[in-house]
Every structure is written in C-alpha cells, then in structure tokens.
Length: 161
Image 1 (cartoon, rainbow, N blue to C red):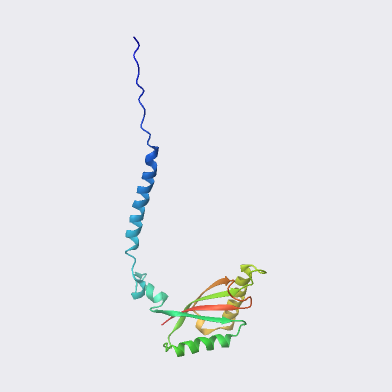
Image 2: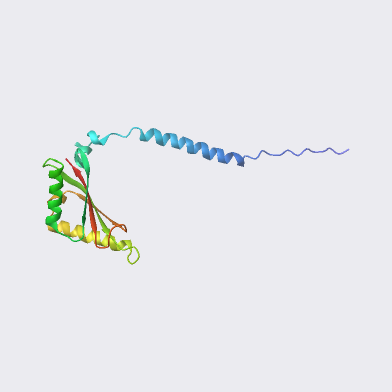
C-alpha cells in the first residue's frame, strides 16, 4: 500500500507586512514628537552660538507686522508711512525693520504670476537704490498675488524693538 503524503502548507507572512509598516511608522512618530518637544525658546535669548546669541541676531523682541500698499514708488512716502505708524503705536526710536516681503499684484486672466514677481523685484530694487533707511538691515523676500490689482505692490514689514 502506498503512503499518502499530507501536504504541509507554509505560512504566508505577506499579510504581516502592513502591520510592520504601521508599527515602524508609529515608532518614527514617537521619536519625532519626542525630539520637537525640546526646542529651545529663542525669543528669550536662545542658545549661544559662536559667542553670539541667536535672539540678538534676529532681534530681541518681535513686535508686529505692518502692511503698506502702493500703486507707485515714492521713497519719501514709504519712510513717512513707517514713521507715522511707529509714532502712532508709541514704538521706541530703536525700532527696526528686520524682514520685508514685497508682494506684486498681477491680473490673473491676462498675466502670469511672474509678472507680479517682477513688479515686486523692481519695487525692491528701487527701495534699495533710494536708500530707505528703515530697510537697511532688513531681509527682503518677494512674492506675487492675484488678490492685488495689477499696478499694486504691498510691503509686509516685520518690526523689532
């Protein structure tokens, strides 16, 4: 009589791959959340780097932003607008602009966003060439927006005491 062999089926572990992925993702999330909970507070002085202080480089006290809209470039008007805002809000004389974003408008149907960016670039170059004193040490960034009129440029300034 012949012996009958019982076929032994191997265990299929491919279904466990999803759980392995989920568990490793969970472990990475825990590691990520643990590392971001120990970020130093830079607004109160920060961590010393090369005998300097990060808080002093960026400005000790971030105050608030100022938004100004213009349809044509006028350096005296920009300076006057900043000075009147500082006076109205009782800011100290040591207040400086640490960051400026220049946003140029464009007509969405007939122009590309690059046209707004070009308007912002031209405006920022004119500000630098005119020597607007409040923007001497400021970092300037460019942008464009379809929400503005095609001939409009907005300055978004971040002030620091």
